[in-house]
Amino acid sequence: MLHRFGFGYDSHTFGSNRPLILGGIAIEHECGLHGHSDADAVAHAIIDALLGATALGDVGQLFPDTEEQWRDASSIDMLAEVRRRIQEVNYCIVNIDVTVVTEVPKLAPYVKLMRENLAGVLKIPVSAVSIKAKTNEKMDAVGQGKGLAVYAVASVGEV
Image (cartoon, rainbow, N blue to C red; front, top):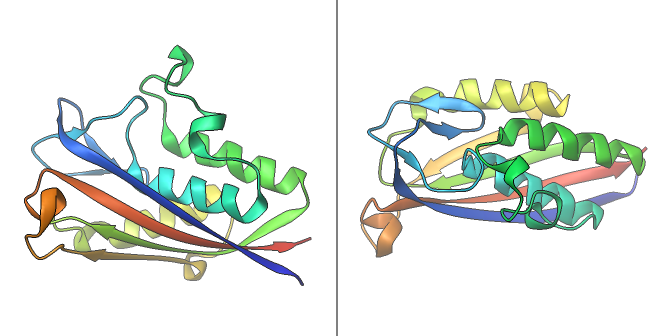
């Protein structure tokens, strides 16, 4: 099986008066992330990694923030649409590796739920979804707790 790899990145600032959603899971925190959709930076980074691996564009091309239909949209629904498009071009998702960089909130209690949720949406085993949380050791805006950043790598194989 020929494997292809893609890299994704997303970041958002805190401050929105809505729930904090990461990996499709509501995370207990004082505020959510600013963004046009639900601002699920984990889902967005994975979307870009998958689209990069299959050369199908990027999250902004498929779900532009200039279109009202994507306002407050579920990023998990967007991820499901990307999975569907990947299948249409005869690829399967092999695995996903995600690193979330944030000072707050602590994500360890949510990692298992996020992995299970993402695996279900992507239709891959939970063992094929890795999520790690790191801090930025108080450096820059992320380190000062003003937002978070997410990095993702995806591997896909030809069907």
